[in-house]
Length: 225
Image (tube, rainbow, N blue to C red; front, side, top):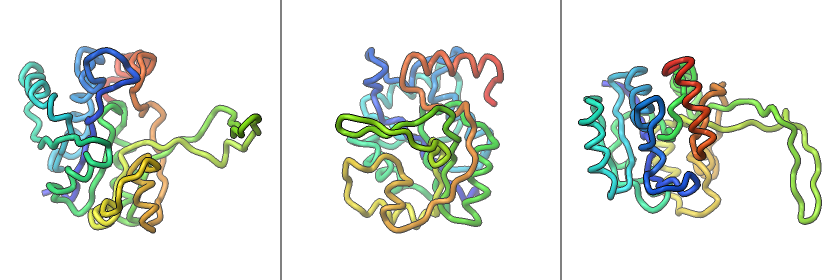
């Protein structure tokens, strides 16, 4: 039995993408985005507990997709809730692992090296998130002006974000508020430090049609990394 529980969050409905089909079900290289993501984690650790959070109204649709694409990967489904915060809180109630990873369902390009960086480091240091360097110049905005800031002081945050189970549960005892942008921010707010590890540049969060095109190209060139 793996000591890891992996929560794959797919509770959104993809407002920025437009249309009626939630983005996690859109096809990339002939397969739903969410299915790519599920397969990557199963391939990395077939013994890990896999949990997917979905909008309740879309659970039957997902089950139909599993039949259509002949997916038999064991996983559990949890109601997505109102916000991401509520999705994770719902999923925590069934997590069995000593360590819990939380990953965006619409990040199907995470590679095994990034997952391994997180899973190996959490055993030693506790709370871990993958990041990549900022390439572009940055400016901070004021009311009527802006100012250049050194990009070396910033990084882009990815998932999976991995925590000791007890730490994540403690963090989620805190009340929801709009400033919670990810699990690491809530854990940090609860008083725990975060260790950064190297992510992979392709590990984008698919939120726009442009992102879909990038994902298509990446999977066409490299497969599932």
